[in-house]
Image (tube, rainbow, N blue to C red):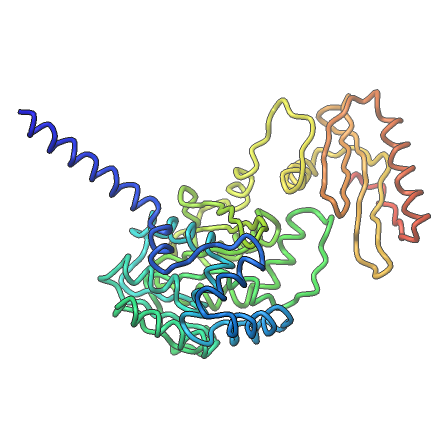
Length: 405
């Protein structure tokens, strides 16, 4: 009897260990590859020295630390699989861990034929190949050294179900896939990088960003078969660029699977970096309200009176029809003509005893609800800020008295 109980306990312990491994498959994979996220650039250098020797580490430090061209950086760091994995792992290890965990938790969303766009040195490609051994993955990147390093890594890991191609999405042979995976490619395919939509209404900002990436988004989503999924992990916060991306998904007939969305908060070389992970299905019928999904990411505390960042911008967007009178307000521009601030106060149609106060600067935005009795003090504060801006040589343009923002 005692032996039976012990065997049952052992079986339960093994099951718990297996569950932990599945939940943190990314960490297990990083350990296998010898990847350790570095805390700073010196940590990256020390790992290069440990894996490649001091001479080679010094060469890479000089070449990579001083290089500003992104394509050259890709070429240099992908000189061979060991350099690629060491450098990429030291920089992006926490991202790889979290991305692998999220992809593993949603492996049922992948179909038989998979296209990975922007595979770099194949770290994610090989993880997927092993995670989904019955599938076939076409992994593309426009950097030849990255493809060579990826093929070397796949050979070492004995991954047989991934085909690596040096090409980009535009030149890839015609065809559609059950699943298209895009990781950190949106920001590399922005048509207009001179966008300065700061302090416009949220949807106006999102439209500008969405337009800048619309051509790439259409090309990417055309590769998804009807009924298939686009799985994307894109760098950035929950900001207008991400909202523009969501609007593009909708415009191209894709429905975001809201329950699968996640924001990955990663630590990369001492910096906190956010990534937005989404799965979108290509459906015949599209009825999703993408903006409603966006708003659900910023729940409003009914008892709150002060809101910050994109939560503040979202709330202002949703309150535009409730703005009654602009009490005072102005946009502020720097010497280059770029918007660098905005201050404004309004009364509200639904709550005449309340003043809505918007404060926007390079440090962030705040939207506050104050008692109407503070109206004069708020207007005086705004006037003082605007006078200080003029004294600093900034341009102050008063907002029109239309009640709009």
